[in-house]
Each structure stands twice: as structure tokens, then as C-alpha cells.
Length: 118
Image (cartoon, rainbow, N blue to C red):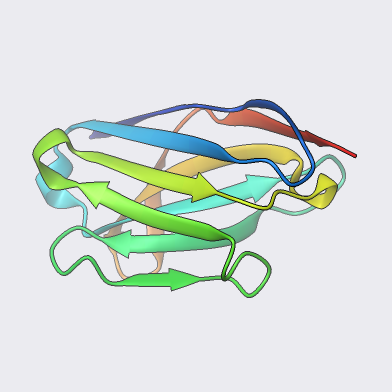
């Protein structure tokens, strides 16, 4: 089992920044990557970015590329999502998830709310 806890959400004005944190515990050695997702009311869950624990390679959705940066601290089993130039359409509950195999996210955190005001 892998436990994930997100933090860092909040209310910010458009153009502002937030940094989300995903703290992993448990059998973290069984996960190969951490992904960030978001879900706005009435919308489907949307993939944002992922990072591989070992190589640190990253991948971003087009909607956030150039504005969001995912990073990791292996020693702390923690992944960060730096969000800059936030827009009202970034408003959503943000989740991190652990992938046990490529593209398969088996463990999820409880989510953290991000609200961007115009």
C-alpha cells in the first residue's frame, strides 16, 4: 500500500502562484511515478503531469505546459507541483496518485482544493 497526502491548496488571484505537495508513505518503493490530476465540478478528472521517481523524467498536459512544474525529493518521498500564472479555469480539486506500472495509477490522495479568482 502507498499512502498519499496532498497539501498546499488554497485561494489565489489570477496570475498568482501556489505550490502543491504530495507526501508519499508506505510501500513507496513499489511505485514508479507520481502523477497530478485535477477535477473541476461537472468535469472529468484531467491528467496534469507526472514524474518518475528514478530518472526524474516529466510529462505535462498541454493545458499546463510552461506554467506548472513538477519536481520530486526522493529523500523525502515527496513530489511538488509548482503552479504559476494561475487562471480561473485552473480551479479544481487537485489529486496526486502513485503509479505501480506505466500509466496505471493505483493509489490516490484525498485531494486539495485550488480556487483561482478572477
